Image (tube, rainbow over all chains, first blue to last red; front, top):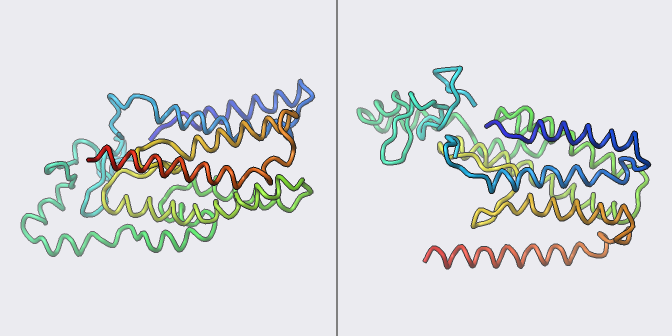
Length: 56
Length: 202
């Protein structure tokens, strides 16, 4: 099943390194984003409408 | 996953008898049970032969045993990306524990390691069993009895709390003190959720 998780994670990692480059915050402070973003994506996918989807 | 017969079409179901992936053209629906045409034909003519021949395709027990080696359970099920991610997460947790980190993180990573190590064989088993029975595969993270994405919500909550700790809003070793409370809260939520599911069924 094609999900949005892959592309969104790519964007997230990109943003994370961008923030690391241009602000004083590094991976050590910002790593929880890597927990939060997949969580949000999964909840959103779960709440999204199933109408028209074949995979259920 | 693609149809076993039409390689360019997406599979929308699995044959209940042999587990083959089927596109809508190949699917034969009998009162909600999905079969492929060969199995349906065999079942009509020689039911015993059909059942015996198909069962060996996906072995959940083997998947579970292989799952104790990081990534191997997913490889058995053909989920190579999932296998790679499992290896990376497992390695990452070990690397984190081996490095110099504070008590809060040590507690968190140790618990995470234990949970994740059990999660891999359980997930491999559930996927293999769903495939063999022709049922839809379970999602990546655990869901409750009423279908709520419990795993995903726990992930978000943990992430937010760790972020708050990193920026000074929460104390640094909050996890080592608070995790039993979290566990209890999770248990209470699941109990409440299951009671709701049961009463709704009545």
